[in-house]
Image 1 (cartoon, rainbow, N blue to C red):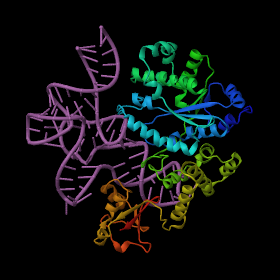
Image 2 (image 1 turned 45 degrees about the vertical axis):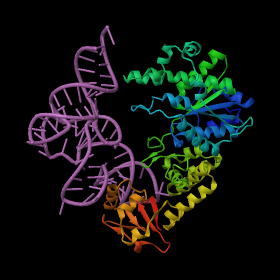
Image 3 (image 1 turned 120 degrees about the vertical axis):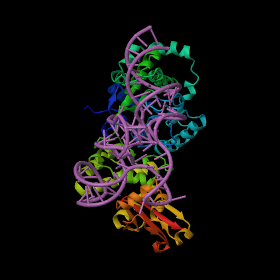
Image 4 (image 1 turned 90 degrees about the horizontal axis):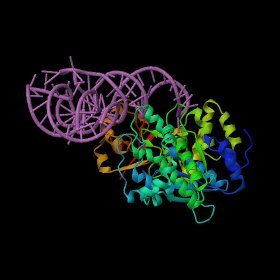
Length: 417
RNA sequence: GGAGGGGUGCCUGAGUGGUUAAAAGGGAUGGGCUGUAAACCCAUUGGCUAUGCCUACGUUGGUUCGAAUCCAACCCCCUCCA
């Protein structure tokens, strides 16, 4: 691989962000010569993003750190249309209010990773609803639609896949790539954006935007995609039984976020360190060399770094400390999730399964009963086998709390009030 | 509009009158082994005020002692034809 001229491209390639690029050499040249503006589009269907989007977010961070300008594009307009690619159940339409709320939540996350502001190098956040909802059908078809040949659209992977499998593809969906291509054109006009970044699944859509910019405005635009990040086991990243790994602390506590990274599979540690932390490559190389039990040190570093980026250093230190106390000392860390229970209830004793449910460790009483029966429940670190076990004030420790555990990793505290 | 096929639990998918809270697999959770890893083995996997009760096989009605299974209407999806 040749040496890259721009710090931006070199960083992305070295750290494993690159999957495909429309014209790597030309883009490298351009980024070496001038400040460029690049965008990534995000759905705003939820009030937070999850780790699935983190590769994209990190890329924008690198973009800004290497002296360029990131645009965060919120899919307010496309959300209104409803992206049909997400399978059956027609997605319910979000109100403008919801979309605004979601955008605010997502902006909160980005604030940690990139700087928004009024300056030239500052990131900006835009909403494609601003232009998409104003489109007039006939003019749009004449100005933009004529540049898309059906023959070519049919050859795109996303479309071909559907047709080959004889799966339905609605006209709405078919238009999605045109709208996204148009976003790129619009951003190049409004903000002089020359590059679209995205996941590998976005390749087709990105290429369309590049094409459109060239045909309509004669501009040289670029596309760059990241590989799909999967776990070494092949599973898609970021989904657990508890739900998605959200980046917003209201949706997932920094402690749980830290735990997510701490539990990374051995085989993924090096790759994740490069993608999700900003440690120097030499140091990552050293951490990667660790074998067997020692690799746990690398996982802690990964968790610390990733949590620091997302929630700040204080939260990361607190999470690491809680984990250390909980797992290495077996003592009670006081910032575990805590629920309050009326002392009067505990006086007469409460069923353990009910407390497990109220503490959020189980979804239902039945699930909690099964957990107890299966030997996974503990009170103050003592295993409990009888599903009719009761908990009372007698179980309150010297610290004034009762520690409940579901398995080895999930804990909660009960505090009588 | 016509002809045919189909809608089952978190997902895929079996089941064509009773022993079906519903096979099997996946996923998930718990246990074991370990390193808070992977792989592997075992268990669990609708809810509840729990030796019983309630809800569940697209919706609503019907037949029957008894229905996911039979009938009717309706809704939705797919294939082919127009």
